[in-house]
Length: 288
Image 1: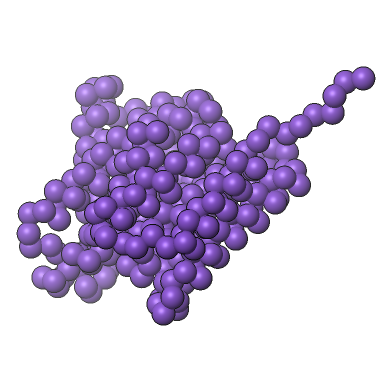
Image 2: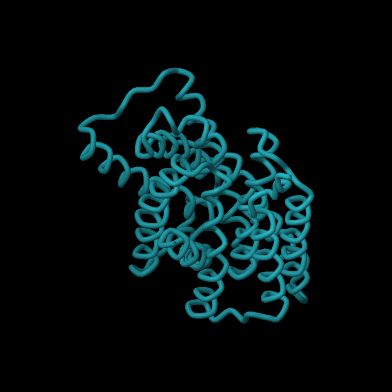
């Protein structure tokens, strides 16, 4: 629950940062700071960086590209064009994608109820996009980027689940952030906007927000999330994402003054209903 509350506030924090800094600078700086913090954690815990087999490194490199690089690039790009409220509701479809993709890759049973749940969740996203009003073209593109960020995050979670029994969550996170930090830094270095003074925040408050987002939301909370995936599996851990839109909508209203519309509430109802339906235990016929 603490992770979901922090991630809800973090979406608002990243939305704020996209108005203060270049989006690729935001993505790279956040993860480099998070990687530095995780390096301190792992050295304090293990005294050294644990070694991996070649196969384990390959899986964690894939997870780093998905969860860290692709997710961050899509998230900051989406938040630049859409509202934090929209992005929060779209992120709430994560459990639905987890159920569907777990059925595909781990052969978990995909029932008619879960198919209906996915339709409800996507219907909720459609309501959110429809509520963008006059900014429908720009917000729609931002919403699609946010949806892509969700899907690559879930794919990465499935990769993490594959190696989580053999590695501890801190080791998994360190290698993911190593690969992600290298990829995001390279992306920022190759962007011409990175070298403009306007791409970097000049005041102290945006940097406080960066540190919170990097160390607490990306470092500590991702560590707890990976531990949850290892213990529960991706589809069960994703149940807790039900709370993300609640915390995210409240944070968007309180900190950014965003207006929560009836369509947002209708979208929230669809997403939560679809999640509940999709994650219910499958009914088995009663014995006679």
